[in-house]
Image 1 (tube, rainbow, N blue to C red):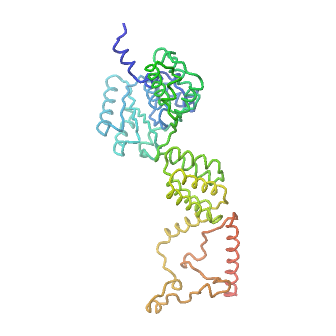
Image 2: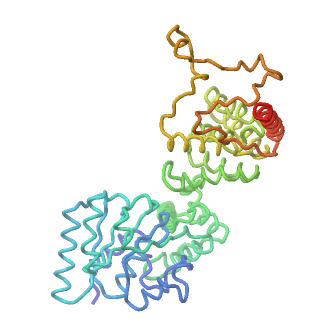
Image 3: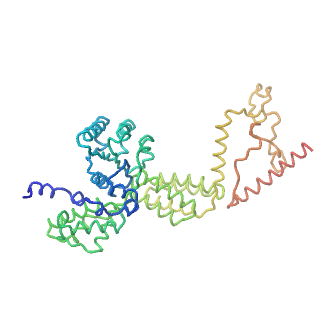
Length: 443
């Protein structure tokens, strides 16, 4: 006879937890990792898991996959969260794994939730147990492991990237929850296809979020004696559940996409990523600052007006705030995207800084030094300096403004794009005059 207390306990579990897949064939999504013949699927099916880090957004199946890995080899499953555990708890888990192995020969899977939150000392505590096979470590993280984990730990695990679930996968998750007679809603709450699509869209790739909202709508429908169709809009609100982390990988990925779209002269894509950033709550002033950087880095002297327009947009945001200032930023983004491009100043400045680092403190040549005092003049400061405005065409042909060790160095190489093409023509003409001056000086 079934234990009624167990049934009641199971009923109290949230729908998202009850519907967690129990077998690999119930797992929805992540076909790039779990499709037929994929290495991770093969390892699970053989019951020979390895230490790994699962990197993906919330609700993509990281915890479920860890439990399936443990179940595939009948391993002991220990779960630790970086929010609650420290070095002592990590070592206790490792010693417990050794004890289990000695007593029963069973393996232990240690699931480290929020593994990116463990500090270096805590991450190092994993190493001896992972190294000697005492336990199989499965870390779950929403942050880039390349930044969040130290190299010693990374070298001992394989990183798998999980994606947010697409609409088709979320639809399958919802269908199961609606129909499952044991763990789900048992078909008591019909939901039309358009409503299901709206729920999947609002969940934005997060299966847990979709099931939480579905359960809330069902509870509300039961309390009001209404249909699920009627209560779902109240639960979803405006349906804006898009993911954004304001400082993590997703934030920097979207900023990167905006920058690359502008650099690639795609105003439409640039506007899309700008809208995504603003929709996610990114500070418009941060975006304005980045747009000003793009104006110098990627447009530069091909169109010097770009920087001024970017600064104007920045000032407009500071003065007017949102949403008026955001339109000025959008204007600047479009202008930069369609402007001629040049990174010549950016690369030239980087090359000059490299020479500064490599050559140390080279002395300023005497003819370029300031001579404000009698002593400076006695020491020969400014002797031989040629005042450009007194020279033909206001140019001292053949003059060198570098320290002798760097004479002839060239950093700035203008492109042929926009105004910079004319700048390049002028510099070529000045170099011709320099060569002419050298020939006159050394016939």
